[in-house]
Image (cartoon, rainbow, N blue to C red; front, side, top):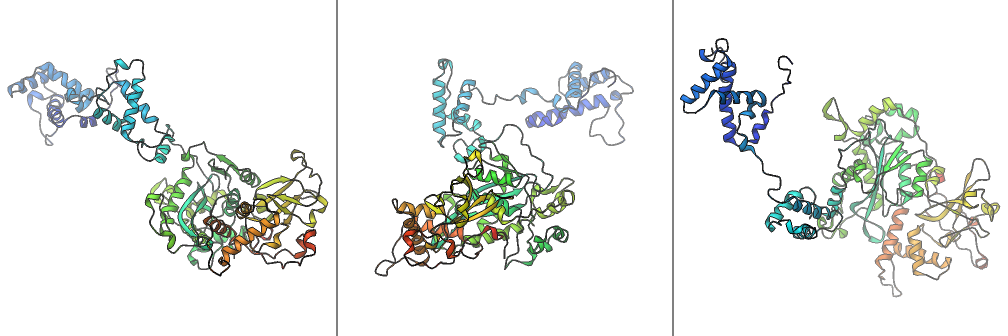
Length: 632
């Protein structure tokens, strides 16, 4: 800057909007006269206009022009002195148009009027107390504020305003807090961080992924006509916004979360009835180049295979379980739990699950709405999809999702253009490359829940069930070699199928898995899980293992064939019986059916040796060692 050495700043001319209209018009009227004093011409003078002689800057000094303007205004009926014109000229040069406005007209009242600060503080405290409490009315919050004031030592000196004033004060302070609204929304609002939202940059597929589980707002028809909601567990990739995998289960368990990891690194094969447009070969993905690296993609659908590097999850018991953590360690995945009560730290999957509800679930028969007050009538009596059918529809929809433009995938240089998840994946593939992660049956067993037990002379006892096999003979009553576990043996099991367990044999290199079948497997004609077993054991509290097995088999047989009483009439079973049977069948469907175990592999007790050997019934057992991820 030259001359005065003071910095000049741009005047805040937009502040003129803060003044009343009359004050703003008065300021503009003065601006016209001040500009004539400064420049010789008013702002609306036509081009080529010559300044009046008395205001020509080349003929008269600034002080002379100010005196002339004062005399002119006085003659026109506006009493004004030269010093008054000078003051307005200086304010205009310093503050612009705002400097010419009457500042008294723009004075603002305090935010809360004449209400004492102590009253405002008490109201704020009363509103903050509602964060974790049940929702109440405004009247209660106002009453609570008066109680807080009464408890102060200086309460005698505080003037408590009227009820109407307190209600108006509440309206100002409670804006955006949902103090008297939904408790869920209120907790969500209060959990937001005070600092600006940040974002972890994801530059490669799988670098940052988020996983979560939520009830799906759709009724499904389980076995025996039971209509119930199921849970959706999904995982999304932040870099491409791809839905890597999603599974539906009646109740999500750690094994389901582990299976979700396996599905994310396994290609989605085309299914009968799917449109040819959903093939990977018809998509923007570089199919030919990918097939040369991973032959599994030959008949894959247009859903990319993404190997997770870091997974962000909440503190749900499924995701912080030892099984899921061990699965992540086995696959070389870093698990990053969020802070408690911080859903915003995994906002991408939260938003995506909401998109599944709005873009998929509400178009499905049996949609219930997100809350009870939005649910229709008689949904359970209408046409509903079965769980396997709904899973197939969801898998097909995910392929369509991959080809839908996403707002989070906009080009920074061209904000109007949004990419699809598949387009983003194809772009990042050029810089990050592709490494296939082949998944074997042994890998699936590694992802199952584990437990450490001794192998006794009678075999392995788990939850009142006995598992035994001839291959266990060298291991009976032997030390496993794992000192930390006091010589116990590592056993993996499937909570949805109690027909077998797997024992890790550490005697050789490398270690191998021994498949051990349930001793009474020949008594049951249908595979079932822990839920059906526990329910049957509750029905026979003091029964033997054989009696419990027969009770579980009878439960599932009655559910499948339709129960009848002694007179041939339909017998009414409890809702609990029907729900357990339906959920058990829902988790057992859609699995490959390997060859059943031979009769020799089933151990027979001494009490049963003289009895007629029962016919071995082919079971729909899930054998992970027989390539379970191959889809036909």
